[in-house]
Image (cartoon, rainbow, N blue to C red):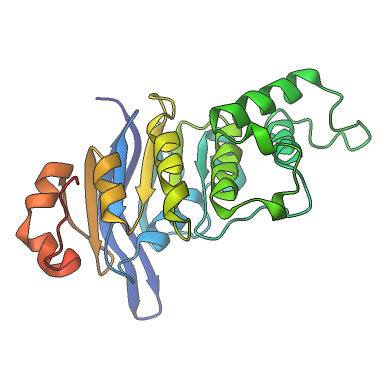
Length: 252
């Protein structure tokens, strides 16, 4: 089993508060992994360290066998680590096509060619349209992003992350705030992402988690509480007690 990402005794402290408590974590290539836990469990802090937004207090982060603990956000993105956010980071006045084209241009180091028209590179235009088609939003490629339904904005965020051609994609609550009628489309898109891309889903919706994930890690108070297959976690009475209560956490 080839490991794409690993943390060793990862720890993050804010004053007297330990937000990430000596977490050992391994993620294989092509994983479909969910990270769950109650509010304040440290999920976002953990992900922010993986992506370089926060620096660990101690411990190591390895990516494709190389230590990246002190790498910048940009270095990690260039190496193939991408993420989406709980609150979208989109430019409301651009179109989806323009948005994705800019992301591809940045990946290809074309972003600094400010003097060239955005659509001058036909390969970038073609790739952007194909990516929007893959995400099911090519029909609104010319609309203003700010006018799109929220579910389509979330899909555009995923398209932006995929434009970087990542080896690891971290999806932070991709269905949060999305109407029920659009959630299935997001789930279908996530399920159909390339198999060689390792996916980590941070999510509160247990039905979505158990439909998506093959393995699940549970964080509690910044520490790795337990980890296992989706079936094992669904049956674990400790998980029900500390996080899920007694709600039905099956695959329904």
